[in-house]
Image 1 (cartoon, helix red, strand yellow):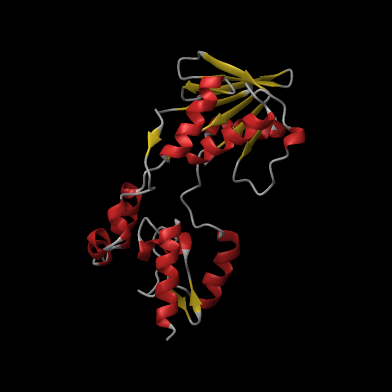
Image 2 (tube, rainbow, N blue to C red; image 1 turned 180 degrees about the horizontal axis):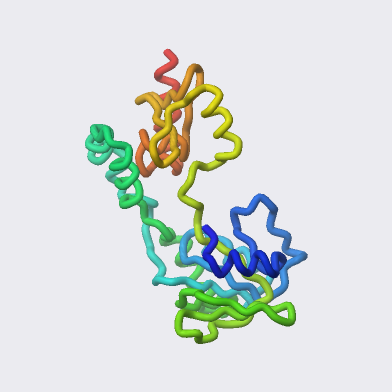
Length: 237
């Protein structure tokens, strides 16, 4: 997701901001330190650790909330029938979407990654600032970031967003023509409505995010992928 201030920066100084999930690969040779990483979840933490290997003491994580530590990206009860049974009885896909949204530990990171991050912070190779960026000012090849009270957070050579995905159908530009051509069913949120064995159309099955209205909040993780594979394989025999 792109905050409004980041969209403005992208328009005026496109070489000073990027999203970690942009199609373009991260080019370390073109990055000007110091670096601001916006976000407090697993992606931001992984990126900060990696960047600190190349730019020690010049990486700052800027986050809106304390680090949220969770072993799983949703309650482990979603891995089995305890939560899945009730979820699959819901026929209103808007309610299913709401349950998925509420179940996910957004912006969280596991204990082992948090321990690595704390070690880097203690050594001074990574810095942390608890602020919500609300405004920017770009000048002299630098970007000044400000909070909601117009207090200056810091000055950086590059801003990298680790602020998650847009809540829209992934790969929409590729998938939308297929939806239209084969008249595939979708919910109001744009995601596929599939059978219990994850079949979307004739000889067409889905996994991952595309299966989450059937699989629930575990659809995007490894456990969900295993369950999805089992459902599909079992349906073919």
